[in-house]
Amino acid sequence: MRDVVALLPQNSGGFGLGVVGEVFGYDRSAAGLPRFDFAVAAPEPGPVRLDTGVVIFVEHGLERLASADLIHVLAWEDFDVVPDEALLAVLRSAYDRGATIASHCTGSFVLAAAGLLDRRRATTHWSSAAALAARFPAVTVDPGVLYVDEGRILTGAGTAAGVDLCLYLLRREFGAHVANAVARSMVVPPHRDGGQAQFIGSPVPQIGYSDGLGGVLEWMRAHLDAELTVDTLAARALMSPRSFTRHFTAATGSTPRAWLLAQRVQAAEELLETGDLPIEEVAHRVGFGTAAGLREQFVRRRGVPPRDYRRSFRAAPAGPVVRTPA
Image 1: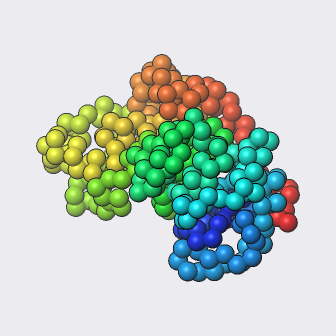
Image 2: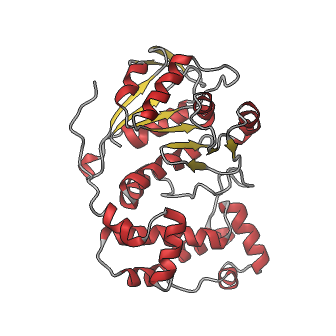
Image 3: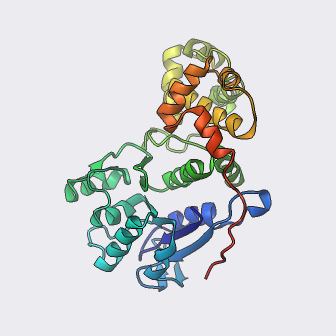
């Protein structure tokens, strides 16, 4: 996945374009990270007005999608309008030849119109989910998640979930080390599970030491090998277990147990990619206790056993691509 194209229709979201460009368009090869042949294309090249009123000039048309490994369809703001058949045909052709196609926000309407979401699970921005489900009954719409992975078809929710989807794609294709390094450069969390709630009481939580949660989250990350019960964590936060669970879920969009499992799997990924520790030792260091416990959670959340993950991602190339943008 080296040739990446962002498909930008009129009135699409400038934030979505910025996210895809930041993840795939920025050259980080000097840091040993993958470099992508990144381009922006539009159904009609030339001036394209974004949802903020800013007008940008897009050089490439639909022909640029012919070589793309990954096509990221950005928000289709006029989702009451059926996309042109030429666009839909190009997307079908790209999928048939093996490309991966992802959508951001209401870009899912374009994928659905092309028939690429039929008999698949998909998501979109929560405010548009009912419209997507009504218009395309062959699609199983899940309005409550951040993103959905259906192999070479992925759909993401709105705005910041585009960051999560892009980092997830990096993690899936290149491993946790690459995704975490890019996340650090963007100053964003390296991973949020796709099944995390799309809409929570505090969408952008301000977690600080004053509320007791910030220090607890940091302590949890540093003590993944410990037995971290809700009672133990609540005591550190100076809260009752019930109050702690309520505050934790409101602030993170996840229960303490689910958040902890995600952190442990992420830490295991890094150890598997960057070292030669035995699987049993990796399991102990991240808090799963035994290799069997690590394997169970790893297969459930990543789809492969730890040994296969290590074999794949320790050998994954991270150098720059050779081809230069047209």
